[in-house]
Image (cartoon, rainbow, N blue to C red; front, side, top):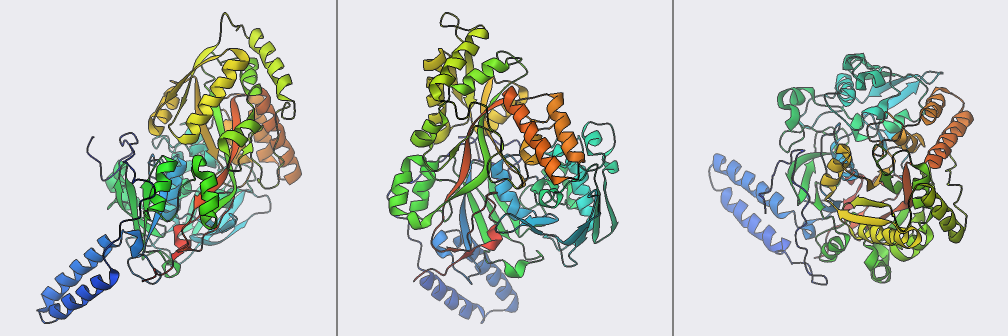
Amino acid sequence: MAPRDTWGAEGHAPLMVGRPAERGHTAPQPASRTRRAARSATALHLIRLCLTAALCIALTAALCLTTLTACSPSNTGAGQASAVLMRGGGPDPDSLDPQRARSAESQLILRDLCEGLTALDRNAAVAPGIASSWTATPDGKTYTFKHRPNARWSNGDKIVAADFVAGLRRLVDPATASAYAQVIDAMANASDIVAGKKPPETLGVTAPDEATVVIELNTPTPYLPQLLSHSSTCPVHRPTLAAKGGAYARPGVMVSSGAYILAEWVQNSHVLLTRNHSYWNDSATRIDAVKYLFISDNSAELTRYRAGELQITYAVPRADYDWIKAHLAGQLHIAPQLNTYFYGFNLTRPPFKDQPGLRRALSLVIDREKLAQLVLRVGELPAYGWVPPGINNYTPQSFDYATTPIEARIAEARRLYKEAGYSDAHPLSFELRYNPGEVHTKLAVAIAAAWKNALGVDVHLTAAEFKSLLQDIDRGDVQMFRSSWVGDYNDPHTFLQYLKSDFGINLPHYQNPYYDGLLERAARTTDPTQRRDLLEQAERTALHDHPLIPIYFYVNKHLVKPEVTGWYDNVMNVVYSKDLGLRKATP
């Protein structure tokens, strides 16, 4: 095994999962807190008899010991200075640099580290963050945000408006190479900056004084306040960025605007966050530290949850779902989520380039209802469209064959397959690449079998670690790939922008000028009804072209221990650790 890198640069090694504890074993019992407290009291009594300098040294050592021993979940309780929340983090994050991170796993952790102008409340509605208030002009093209006067960086420096200007400029700067750069393309000059046509300093964001951020938009953008809760729009601590550059997001270096500080990052193992006492609302924080364990296998995560090593899981294993419902029903949380699971085509190369009929044929023969019942089994909805249900002020669109019986769909698929030049004698052959995981493997096997049985397609299944998969997709070294898209804010634009030709994370490389034009027209209108109609038309256009195959719409799936207080569910799957607490452990 390669040595673990404790600072966690963006170029970290591929994901490796440590061996989990045996299922059913009880959690290891730490030393009694009572005995530890007694020893500490005796030690302190002796220390008081020593010199003042020795007292300071001993107290420092005692505090360090308390912090280290607190990492056991049984050492957690409300009101204890050493309370540590143990959360599942899924696979390793690709980065913890707010402007460079792209995975859902990264965003989970960054929500604790970085706070932007706005945040989300328990229901995933927009709420004040570092900005205590904001206003918009009647035309919806200028927003003014006012800061809290007590907002501080984790090192005590005052957070000022220029820090947000710097963060947003960094996001669109081509030198940053952020996959999320186009997420703020509604801001004046953003698209030209991303394209290298204008310098970052021309971005439509200014700081007229230390407490005010003014954002100028090309078009009305009603979702802007919610968008600004996303970590990619967070401020940057300018002196640290200037001094450290690419090492900006490392433990001991990163300066945080959120409720926690990055204390430790051990690749393939965990991230440890500690409480930011300079955070403007630190008095409301009840958890002193959060430890995210990186466990990509859901069954292994359940084993560690049952052993007492985790208090919140990242997900729930489908194979154990019936057992969980029978034995842990009170700890199970299932709720809708704005997230679509899909197979993407590489539209820049054969066999799927310029072959909409062939792409449609492959989608037609997938029995999504059967997959939901027999493979998924945790309440996921079959996906016949791109935008999931639950989006504000929008009616999700569907393929025209969504209600067609599977037999008729297979018959049409065979006709299209033949028209594309394939047959039993000359079958279509391609590789489907996906990252390892219980559901990914089961779905890939089931769908490949359906394509083989209905059409005679030869599919080569290749599993690649998540980071390697992303690199393969970015290089175009794939034919078909597994992915998903999580809504960054509760508006249809967060899904429809994904397929815009110039969007940085348009992984299928879909390009349709008519589709782009519909999104641009929707962006210019101030009429909510007209905007919705244009966006719904755009989704229908993309579905007709089949740049990808939606498989299912996610649900949030978590196990939460009874000692965790304050948990909530919402469609954005956003639960800030600062909102949670831990009940005092029973002696």
